[in-house]
Amino acid sequence: MNVQTTAEKVVDMSEPAPNNLPAVPSAPQPKTPAAKPEPKHFPPRLAKALLAITREIGLIGKEGRNDFQRYNYARWEDINDKLSPLLAEHGILIIQSETSRSLLEENDKGSTLAIVYEFTIVNEHGEQWPPITWTAISRLRDQKGITDDKAAAKCHTQAEKYFCIKQFKIRTSDAIDNDAGDGAVTHLPKKDSTPLYKTMQAEIYAARSVVELQTWGKGAIERAKVLPPDWQAHLRLRYNEKMADLKEASQTTETWDEQTGELTPTPEAWDKEMRPETSSKWEDMSPAQQAGILCNEPAFWRFLNDTHSQFAVNGADSAAAAVRAHCIVDSRADIKNGHPSGKLWRALVAEYRAWQREPAVTEPAAGATQEAAKAPANNANPPAPAGAADPIPTAELYAADWNARIDRASRPEHANQIGEQWASEKRMRELITWGDPPEWQAIKKRIEKAIAELKAAG
Image (cartoon, rainbow, N blue to C red):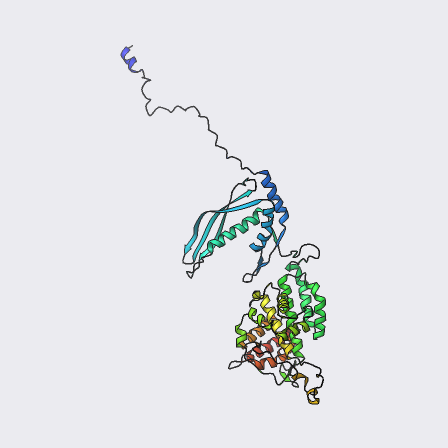
């Protein structure tokens, strides 16, 4: 054997192995366990206080109203009124800190602002709840390019409100006890209020005299208290509209012929001496300004005492209190058009106008002459105070009111009612300044058509 050849075949193990040699598996390396996150620490005293607040806060009423989208909501001021005293009682402080802000979208349709907040709950011992992150959004710029300078403030309030609702599991409801303690009144949810509301509305429409309606009203006060506040306002409006119609019907100058649909004249019952006055100044005023004027009129005080005996009115202050109670507001400044309070106010003004037209029956003064004693009673009405506002509606408002009445008519018995109402308002139409052609002609055609359709449906 050739020694050299054999030696050449000896592989030098000190050199690296060629690349074409099979790989030798390496020994498995021990895995390093991932670091476990530290558990969150929830201080026991703080947890106990938060649970106590959750138990004690109770229900929050949905007193806010979105008329455009037709839903009720719990207002932040109502939540805060109940939450803040509980936080103070249990020694809790909520700290809201902004961490970042950005635009969610920015295009030709506008932009939306998003702000991220961190809420930290601290107790009086300095113990902290683990921070909680919350994001709020608000429209910053609309498609017309108008920027909302309160967008950031809205985000702040929105985040605080909904963080508190979720943190303390605050419940909201339409059925709420408005008054604490004995005698609390619970409002039924609207889905359960419909039968009672329809029954009471039908009873109002069925009244055939002022006395009958007043008697019904005295007994209906307690029944209506369980209805939602806005439904109570609507019932009050229906009541006042019907009362005004009944009072004016007793002095009507024409009646509605159900067979022909035409108006038939009857003996004149209105005071011929009543002066038509312009109404532009009155209609230019807000409901709050109108209320301020009428509340200072002695005639308005007498009207409230005569027709709303539940109010003891003896001056401007008590008249203002009666108006606030009637319109269900805390201040006359809260009476606004496009709101149930505004409808209630207009109905009260209409009732006052009808009351002013009623002939006043007075006893002749001692020593009065025979001629004075024989003077017609309907001339005994006191003259209107100097500068008093005339509450006669404008043509536009009168037309809008009647269009709304026609739209509300849905049952066969409404046919006679709208006919009687139209007939009872002839004198009012004479005091309104109409256009050319007069708008009342179009209203009358709508009424005739509505009456025919309602009777056909019956």
